[in-house]
Length: 211
Image (cartoon, rainbow, N blue to C red; front, side, top):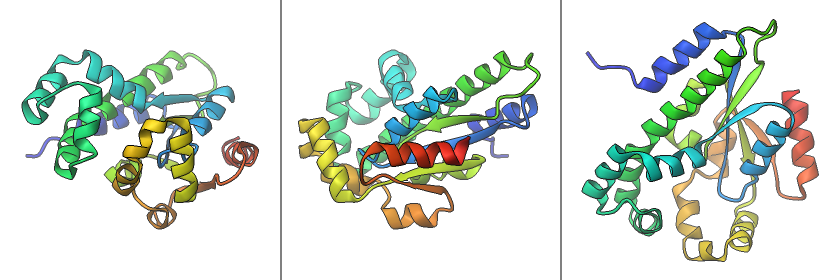
């Protein structure tokens, strides 16, 4: 019998603890405005699980994951891993197969802890969020209650990414090609938020949808 992923077990446990709490995904491509949207949600009082930070913590502190990466990719150093995975699709898929299950598990553990801390309140937490770049690509968004997708023109994404970090210029096209395109995002059934201009319209769209 095939065992359920740990993330499925955690999702079921969360729903038992707080069936009225909605678990949202928040995603978008590089430099789309996803992290800015996450900050707006935090400012509005929502808990947002930051999977980029979880990944960084796992690479720094999880000996099992570090051992597996050294065995399968020859290194557990973040900078070297970036060079490997963005120059070779097979290596990128290996990295994702090692990291993604652990990231999902830790993210849901965070959410479970936050919800448990509020179980004594009269009103349950209305919504929590998982901020992750590849929610659509991995299909994990289908297991959540709903998903917000920040959509941005690829040319603008590229300009923003390089302006934010000039070292991205070397990898930006490879990064963009590893992420789903806007057509896929729009056809996913998720809630779409446009972010091609200044940030105020994004904030307005986001809070109007959530609050």
